[in-house]
Length: 549
Image 1 (spheres, rainbow, N blue to C red):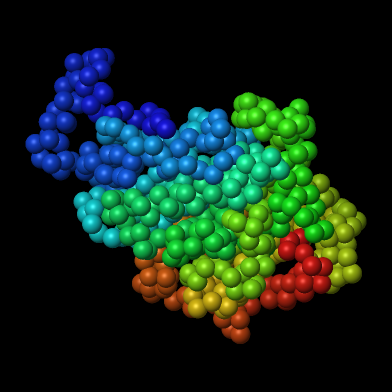
Image 2: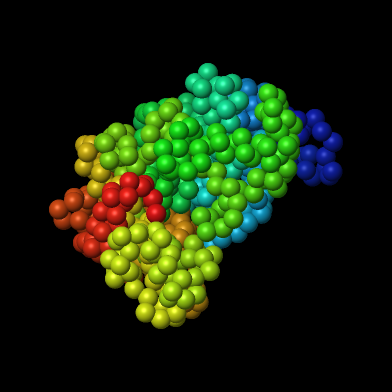
């Protein structure tokens, strides 16, 4: 365990300073802290289960204190690689949590707003970050835990889109987390399963998320957060993670609301064992990948643990998108973290009984369509017929392309509706099987910057609006106002389980009325979002016995 870039104050005083001025300022700050009981919010100590930490002001106002790079689990290195996260070891002193911890090892890729975190990467990466309103550590504020996206392959909780400063100003404690990615987070193998007391392997990234939530339960009250009012929220792979946690028995009781942005339960169908006609199992993939790395035999795991993270990434080549090459590593049904396919568990009403917001963006499919080499009507129709078989002509009628120039838009819309909008609607409809309400949204705003480029409300676009960081991404008072509306609704939901308020009326979802809330150029309640398309696609899914297209 380490605090990268963070220094215990007592160590600083005992170390030679470069200048007398620096020495004097540190001593003065320590003297003030001792004399006043740490009334300076930037230096106020927070007592965690594992030791003291101190934060720094998020900006010059001092209204929000940020604590960056707090370890929530032991470094998953050496023999702890491909093991469930272990408790963090206590530390001495009072580290100043000023800098983010390392990102988890990941390939250097970029897609849309997603890119490999440019911060230093290290296998010792299980850190979280907290933004908390200053001045009232006993406030019992709602807590919001963000799970980042990136295809379970790239990203981190420290990326600039995820700064929690402005959300915290609204009266919430914001937590962003790292979790193991790609081959370090979702690699399964029979020998790893044999090591496990539960006989499973592979879902280490999900176990990291659960460990972070356990850490929040144990420690968040010290930051003014209420451990009985925790909301998990995430986008893309983070949204899929939210859906997985909604049906994961080890996550029960660790959160009380959930928000899933553009990523659904139905996207997870791989199994650790017994393929059941759904393709390569997790363990079979692990054996194949180990052989490609030259690691087989009875000591295959020992050989694999001797490989550097970069060697694993270079050989395994984790796939970021379904339309790109590489090996797709993501959560799988293991009988423990995920007892069954999440979509099936939602359909059976086995999700945790907590309120859920879920939705999609009007052009979620845009960046995924870019990688598909579809340039002709013939190629597009062939693909649709391969995907939908006997129902292909019905699908083509609803998603037509009569000329080559129309192919890109038709395929983008098909992806948007089939992979994002319809699964969100289906998942929210299945919330009727539990007592908690579900709320469906659709994000349609296209800011001037993207409109000028001929792009729509692309995948991930809503994220800076949610975090009220939109002014850093695109100009326009309308966008800033929309951002304030969305962030306020998210915080109200975190506090009460209902996003309505301050003039925003967002009714809970009901299958009969089929209502959703649209965040766009106008704020409005709509009905029947892609109803005809979704009804057809759900019927096809049921007939084909598939959880995804």
